[in-house]
Amino acid sequence: MDNYPAIFSRSGKVNMWGRSILYRMGGSAGLSAAFLRGRDPAIDPGFARRLASGALLQFVTHPEFFENGVPSLGFYGHFEPAIQSYSCAASLFWMFMNYTLLTLPKDDPFWTAKENEGFWGTLGENCQTTFLPGAGLLIVNDGLTGTSELINGKAHETNPTYLPSYCRLAYNTDFPWEATSTSGPTAAEISLHPHESKLGVELPEAINLAGYRDGVLYRQAGFKEESRGGTPCFVDMADIVIPGGKICIRRFRKVSAATLFEGHFGLPHLGGAAKVSARTVDSRQVKIARIPGRQLALTSFHGWDTLADIEHTGLNAEAERSTLLYVSRTDPSRYGAPELLISVMLQKTDDSAWTDDALQPIKSIEPLDPKIPDVLGGLRVHLKSGQSYPVNFQGIDGSSSR
Picture 1 (cartoon, rainbow, N blue to C red):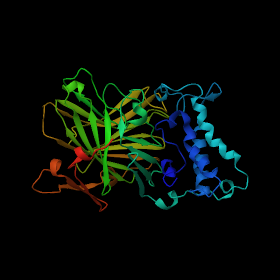
Picture 2 (tube, rainbow, N blue to C red; picture 1 turned 120 degrees about the horizontal axis):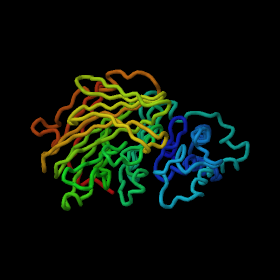
Picture 3 (tube, rainbow, N blue to C red; picture 1 turned 120 degrees about the vertical axis):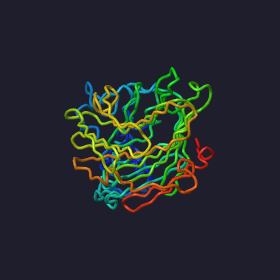
Picture 4 (cartoon, rainbow, N blue to C red; picture 1 turned 90 degrees about the vertical axis):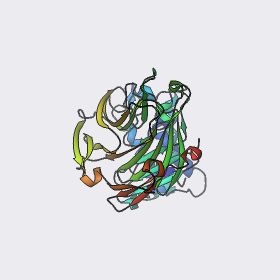
């Protein structure tokens, strides 16, 4: 219960993640459990009521929530990719577990305490991070955007039906995941197209956690071996959380000629198509996608050779059409040297303008050891804000865990 409230956004939104998708506000049922135990709960009652109410309103106020008079099989409206093999017509009614709060007496602190924002009230424009090594999760509460984000580790693909629910690189309360794209980049995911493969674009078979230290989350994406004669391909990943997003550092270790993609969150077309614009900041390419009340930005800082956007149909949980910003790197060589790839992924939950320093927050990067290339010996990332982060992939093969 110490960490449970962190999975909700400032307004109480539930993340579209795991088995909570069809259950929607059922993801807040743990709040009921806290107050039904018969002893002092481990969460402030005014904060708990705010979260439970926000989770309820997130869905029942959505115009597509009800279908033929009952909640649809989806998240907001009907969404086929969210339905899993064990789903049935009764699955969605688990969401009403949070209504057990109505069994509390009217003088219970849950009803009488003054509603408050809990830790959100003290964040300002900063981020709060909660690392759960057992679950392989880094939970990010972003005071700048009010979003809660789950950055995922320890995810393994055994059934393609379940992949979007568990194996994306990150899950954000205000930018729900998209279904898998078979033609190239996928939202909130890293994907690989080996040029010699007949399988097309491949998604990671596993995302392994490799630790969280000095403000840097380390993970490793492993791709299936079939298309390379039994030889695996790895992408070592380091993420630095900043207000409004994260800096994504990737070390691409390939064994065949290939193209690597990484997609931002998908942006649904609500109130018209998303508007995409381009800028150059500090000689780096930037793309911005906007809809009313939400924005995404992607900066290609180092190593990626393409920054682009693509429109998807039928993949987004909120709209039939959506826009995805992505970066890619193509290398026609086999067994080439590892490559260092750096991008900045940002989001907004309002219509305010982006500053140059927000879009490109990196002041400089330098090797940790001047005698060793940064792709092998590590690097230090200096931010314009004055913060500095050491990034070192040394030993990642032995430290990544399931």
